[in-house]
Length: 302
Image (cartoon, rainbow, N blue to C red; front, side, top):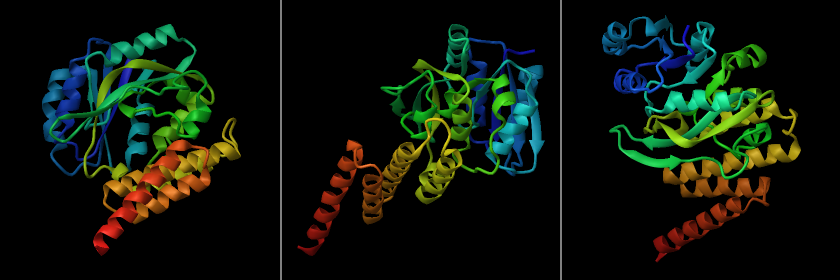
């Protein structure tokens, strides 16, 4: 029985799946097994996967199901898991060779931790490296549930490893949530277990124009669902709720600005200020957008 079961959901993943699987093969830690769920793919995912089945042999198990979405695909893999630790890898992301070794090491050092995460870099569709997330300045680890709720910390999925026993305690991914289902599970784990942080970049996250996170309105709805679901949990009270909502509206403002919708972005930024005016970044974002919107309007009139 492997020490780590690697959960890979795959839906029409033929383009990038080989890079993900090669990154698993390159791990310095070798006691792993892949649980790959083909979530109703209609492209040539099966054809691309075939050589890896021969190559990996018993170290890979493929589960096939009708398309049910990311949370259901991950849950199918978890139900088939037997390892002490579960590690997430989406089919379009990539691990660095140290990824599993660093994750297992942190659990050995922190036996009370139920979940661990680390730093990450972004890559585009051509594999070019973009910006990096190297950790949260404060509240990076320990009992961090309120900070997960408030969106004060980020836990990048390709770096997440958690103990299998946590699922027995807090349950599976919520299949009614088609976004933020990851943060939902991390919060439920963090309410019961300590969280550990690895101060290194151990994975690469694929950013693409088709990413759901580029749909500001859909993400806002999902984030509000998460916030309301956990309102009233320990550390998730009235003030925390307003902080969480303000962060969501600020994130939406940034996304709308990138999509060249300045006035909608400004409106969202102002909502962030109304919800939590004590957050200086909310004020800076709204002020900057206001000046640029007014500057653009005056420029068009001249």
